[in-house]
Image (cartoon, rainbow, N blue to C red; front, side):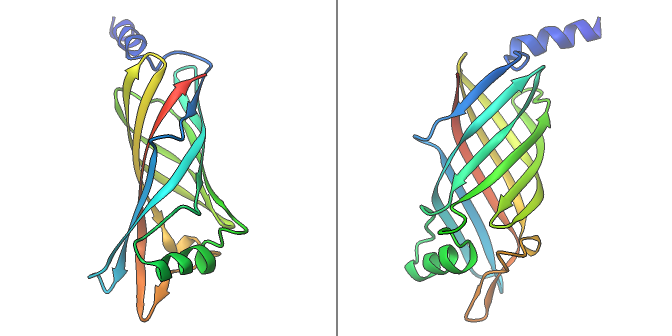
Length: 181
């Protein structure tokens, strides 16, 4: 009986559908990051990146790939933006960061996830929390947050300027709408 109740709730939640591709909509999505400087009095906020990609539902699990165009990122200071894009991220050669979501069973509206994030020439394991809000049967709004271990991004290096460096992690927040294809 417990198993039947679980299956009934699962199907009503809308996540049990199989073989559905969800396209991330470029309009209205946001990708932001927050980095704390060492010493800890400086908070750097980056905004403006654009996400694209596809999320796939298969046998109740979700997986997929999200690409983030890095060139639109802005932190509020032109010189810092130039250093970030040219010296650390090298967006001319590596224009996108790519996140590959490990298959996850999204129970309810909030769930933990894991995946691999590639920035420049490094791929690191990340984990975080996500929430899904159903807007319409064919449209979902997703918000997620995870941290990037800066010291593992060897090809990027630890950003620093005039004696201030970025702390050990950068927090990333992403929000997007996805429409079933």
